[in-house]
Length: 291
Image (cartoon, rainbow, N blue to C red; front, side, top):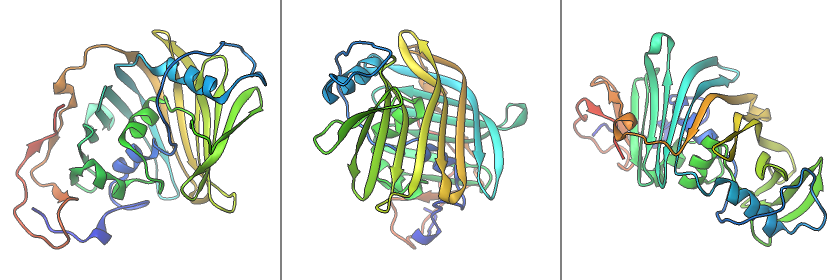
């Protein structure tokens, strides 16, 4: 196994931007559930937080699989780039993100199955893999996230918080949830008509905006409201990630072969489960995992 130093693992600016792309989708926290609320176009003061949460959960509860194709755009002080992207999700735990360059050439991928993950960035010709718990070392956002939250963020199906630490108010024709997660101040906005989160913000202890995630251009796909446009901003770092889905489909069969990619034999391989400076043989040319 290739030896490495933990300080060499990229975080915000270095090597594997692709893993950061996967992590950036998960800047908000969520819980799970289901039921119903009146689909009023306007929020009402009589609504209970539990009703609003369950209305959103009901919108998403029948999702078994997701297939989306579109463009992913990265805008940072160091780079401005965009590429065609394909995102596959198969419940309960399989997710695959593939980026392509011009002429259909694959430029990178991220795969996870709820237990392990692997990602390859051709720009650095580096292949990272390990257990899901080690994936946090590669994420762009500092907040701890769960794998379910990562999948939900990629589809734009995040849920508002549902516990006694959050308060619900009405703002700009939406239900607003405010509360805390660890050291962060978290806010969510829910569209009462569609039963979907349209915005989430993460602020530090001083109230300064650390990250904002917005969902726009909603479409009904087999009765489920999904955003075509997902945008994540980090204002202080002047970083923005945008994904625009040109097509979305739900609950269609996804062959396990579609979750597979080949890693070049020349790629540097880093197992995040290995201790620092633990040497060994480099894994030969291999193919990405399949669920």
